[in-house]
Image 1 (cartoon, rainbow, N blue to C red):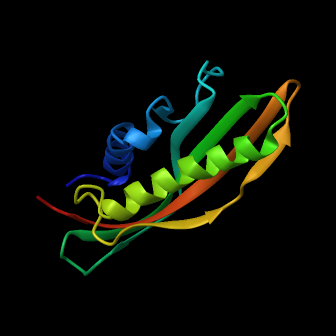
Image 2: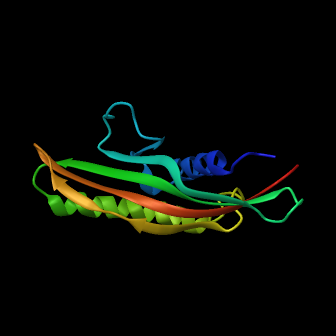
Length: 147
């Protein structure tokens, strides 16, 4: 029996997002970077939070697992156009949420699917432009069975 669906869900979401034409040119990576990448548009599939696991039934060797996958989006644009920077961030958010809706079970990794949850968007000035960023939360539900 797999110990958790989290690694498989992250891997499938990564593959799905990297294949989306609306994210062409956007860095889509597993986890936060050790150093700032050169790309000005970035998506990071980060850790799972709020992980709960419980037996679905005594002696059934089935575990129900629920968690939230955090997905970070960052858009940097040089210049003075805050609106364009923020709007591009929202376009990337839409691509991520549409990907989750179109493949709600992440290729059958999840049983109950992934649905968009809370987020915290921000847009702030930098030394030479604007940085728009948000952490998306995808709420996931899965069932693990002994094989």
